[in-house]
Picture 1 (cartoon, rainbow, N blue to C red):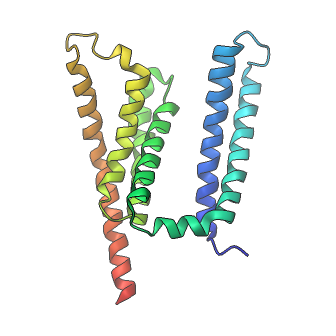
Picture 2: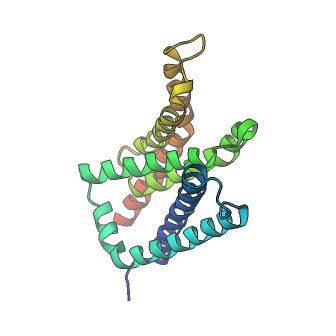
Picture 3: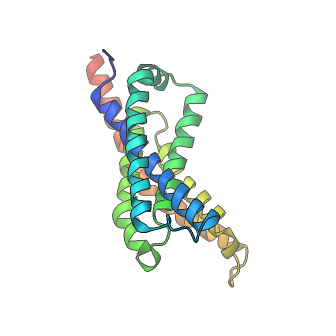
Length: 205
């Protein structure tokens, strides 16, 4: 019997499902149907939905099994305050931020609504979770989420930034926008970190 909690397994399965969904959506829909075989009869909405669903299911199953087999080692590693661990957590947070931006591709005029009503609360929840688990300098996790989004915008829309009146200064403006947007995530991470430290202190007393 594994000593890893059901909550950890569920979280791992959720991350796996999101990864599988993303792989199915962008691997099949964007790469296969958008680039490789755009005229194929397989590139239909039912097929894309089926691939995305299968990818999410496969990712969830893989995430659950990974947590069941390696969860104890992952938890033990997460409790060690090391430079390697911090870099991995920062990379994970940045990847989540980029993933959120990928989900908003094609939203058009509704981008702002989706961003503030769906993406920002989701990122604050992720920042709070990371801040609770890794309370030391928790502000980094909130900043990393928005840094990942900024990197995504630079790589996907970089050629369109700076062609207006602001010129190259437009990149500074875009970075400043995401830096300001990081404030709610940083606050959420620090509040969760304070709660985590309070619980640890109460448990030790």
